[in-house]
Image (spheres, helix red, strand yellow):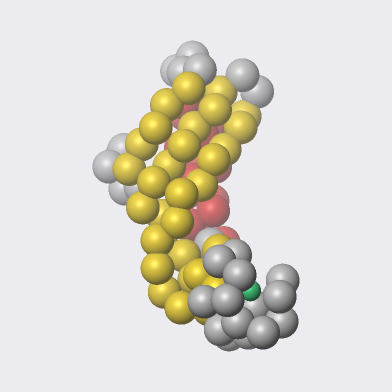
Length: 77
Ligand SMILES: [Zn+2]
């Protein structure tokens, strides 16, 4: 698809790093599947993946995690 940010690039499958903040928890998740713009580098994460990331962040918040760096999929139940 065409990039919505720069309107010039094409997005291609790749991996990105997502930072989530929920309450007092900061979670950095690496290796998240995404479509990356080949022009400006903007990343687009699918809704289903986003839901999974938010669930992981909620879980970390409940566990009292303050800062954590994880690999996508490694913590999935
Ligand atoms: Zn772009």
